[in-house]
Structure formats: structure tokens, C-alpha cells
Image (cartoon, rainbow, N blue to C red; front, side, top):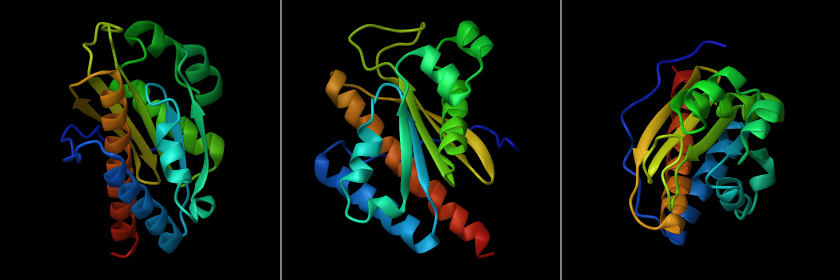
Length: 183
């Protein structure tokens, strides 16, 4: 797999609320249906919120292949193929881990696009990272990468903001993929 350089420029993420999340997920489903492309998720701190939000949209079954909730590092390694050396060296809250999670979800679920979330929702720091530090990983035919985010608020708010960021990045990757295919 060719790896693109991780994207450091974070997209503007709408404030976490259910209507914006539903709109983002509806756009993901619509885009996937039009492009005839599929999606898989690998979620740590969001624990399935991204996949569940997509699944709430009518027609999601044409797009959503599946997802892995990988709260534990053994699940990240065993099911998603994240390097155990990487996890031991850097911990689970890391841009490369996010990237490998997304690639693993894409591969294991046979999807066109993989998206992942890993980070610290709180209340305490984790792996030397402060509360609100989140990495969104992505993988598609062009390669893979990750985006670093910093959110504030309580645990629930950070998880919802992470879900919305993942949906936003996924939609951007899907749209950029369609632009590449049409050029």
C-alpha cells in the first residue's frame, strides 16, 4: 500500500450535535451510493458511534461494510493488524496507530474507504496525551494518513466531536477520491 503523508491540516468540524452528525452521515451514504463505494470503521474512543451514525441513515447497507470497536490494544493488533511494536513504543493514541487502524478496517472488511478514531476522551490523560487529543485515521485507494484534532469539553462531548470529525474527514476523502477518478 502506498502511504500518503499524514494530513496535519484539520478540516473545520461542525459543533457536535445530532442534526449535523445526521447530515454528515447522510452525505457519506449518498456519496457512497453514487460512487458505488463502501466504508469500514475502526473505533477506539468513539466505540462505534461513527458506524452507528452511518447505520442510522436509510440506505446505509449499500455503503457500510462493517466496523471494529477496538478499545483494547490487543484488538487493535489482532483484528486490525496494528503493529504491536508501534503500540508498545508509542501507545494507542498516535497518528500512525490511527492510520494503521483505518487501513486494517478497510482491508478486513473489504471496503473502499477506512476511517478510524483513537484518542483521549478523559477524564484523565492517556499514553502521555492530554484529554481532547484525537487522531482520525483514513485509508483508501490513494494511501492512508491521519489528522490530529484537539477537542474540549467533557468525555461525551469529546467523543461526539470525534465522531463528527471522522464523518467530515471520511466525506472529504470520498469526494476527493471521486475527483481523482473523474480527472
